[in-house]
Length: 146
Image (cartoon, rainbow, N blue to C red; front, side, top):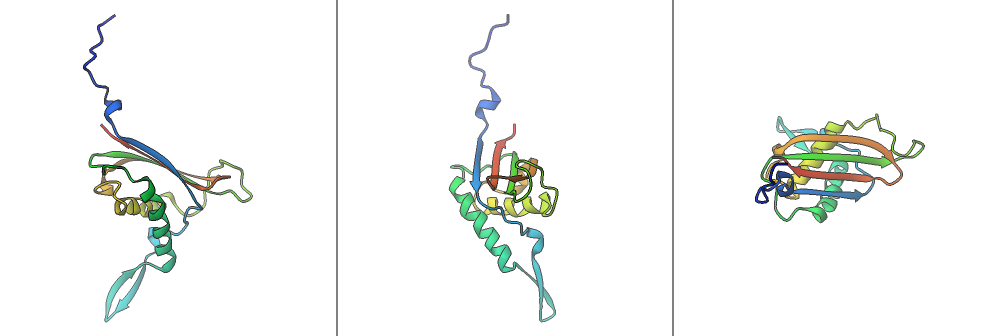
């Protein structure tokens, strides 16, 4: 049996990992729903009140879980969007709108604003799922990549 080098640090032990669940009815309005208004012939983008409310709701929950240090290296982001199940079975995949990419864009923008990382471009690997769930909310796991 080969000798074990006790000075060797396992990379998994050094990587930063956080995970948390934000109990809430996840917003269904998405980043995609920005509006355009023309003023003096120039297009102006603005967020409708519903999108502003969704952004504020996400930020209010996210700041409670903000890491002590912002991520500055590539990360994996795992998210599980758990929507109120209604007549659907608990844990059944939600295959209706909103699309995961639109949900994620708003979430990652809010996480950037809440100082989870220096830039959401650091998210190099993503796993995103949508479910109908007895307990609605958003599960988030962030792991620094090697």
